[in-house]
Structures are given as C-alpha cells and as structure tokens.
Image (cartoon, rainbow, N blue to C red; front, side, top):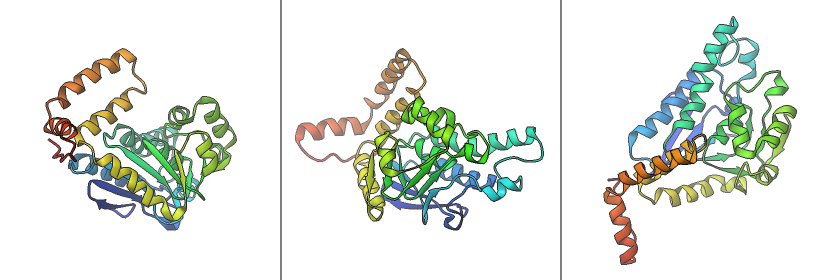
Length: 267
C-alpha cells in the first residue's frame, strides 16, 4: 500500500485513513487516486471485511484537491489543454467517487476535521456519517472558481436535498458539525476523542450480521437511488433467492428460534 492510505484491521472492520496529515489529507495526484481505488478494491475483493470506516489522519478528514498542484496545473485538476483536463478528471477523482459508489461493503465516514470540496463529497458517498464536534465542512468549489468535477452535483442533493445542496454549492459557505446534523448530512455528532470509538461500535453492530446479506442489501440501496420501484422489486426477489440458500440464513433463523447467538461463516 502506498503512503496516501493507511489501513488497520479490527476483526471484520477495516479502518481506512487518508494519510497525509501535513497537507490536511489533500488529494494531489493521480497516484493518490490510484491508492484510494486500490485500497477499496482490495478490501472489497478480500471477502473477510464486512464494514469500512473512512476517516483522516491528523486534523482533517480530507481537504479536497491540493490547491498548490491545481495552481501549477499538475495533479488531479487542469493540465495543458481542456482535452487533457477532461481525461484527468475521468481517470482521477471520478474513479475515486465511482469506486466508493460501487462498493458493496457498508461504509461509515468518521469526519474528524475538515471535509472540503472533494473531501465532503467522499464523505457523502459513505452510507453513514458521524462527525466530531469540531469538524468543519464546505462544498467550496465555487470559492476557487470551479464547478464540482467529481460528481458532487449528483451526490450532495441526494444526501441533503436539492435546495440545501444548491445553497451550499452557490455560496461555498463553511459549516460545522451541528449544522450538518440539522440538515441530515451526518447522523451523529460526538466528542472528537470518541469519534473512532463510536464509529467502531456502530461498525461492530453491522459486522455482526451475515456478510452476503450485508453486501446484497448495500447493493439494493445503491441501485435503488436511481432505478424504478418495479426494477428494485425484481432485484429484491433475485437477491432473496440467493440469500435464502445460504448457510448463514439458516443459522440466523435457527438461532432466533433457539434464542441463542448466531455464528456466521459467510457461506
């Protein structure tokens, strides 16, 4: 694993950290994007992880793009000409957001500090979000004279509704954890020193359930964001046909009837 991502394992839980605290975990290069995508793909393919907690090292969750690199027309933003810039977004930040969007594992964003621009969008792509009391957030693309190039115009309105997302995009205003809670962007605000502990407690509740059922439930939630109700019903029937044949389903039913704790194997 390259140095932009740090991974820790806690049983079936992976703690994924953006790991460049000296730059507030700004994403500065295509290599950084490659590291994120490779880490997520590795966790998804491994088969022994049920939940991922995403957070940042140091004082920030992720401060978005590296402004110095953007100014120098290198890294993840503008290059020498518009065609190159378009391709740069496609193979850089858009690969990162798509990797998170397509991930079948449940994800929890533990927002420990600044989550700005791209960083805020990455948090919003997680299934659940907890924020430290002192976290600060902004959809700040407009403040540096650009539009959201990472899919944020799709992501943020589906998280907090169109009107509030428009306000945040058009003003670029910075807001705190309590305001994020009020708008439904996060579900919980906690003391900074307890953020990872509470994220792990939540992850443990999720990871206690059958892994295949978790992945298929996540897939239904993802697909349900942009498919019709009838389409979701068809997928639901197909996915149920799969999980009804698993050992873990039979174990779950037997454990409930026998009033004991189930033991799941992932089969």
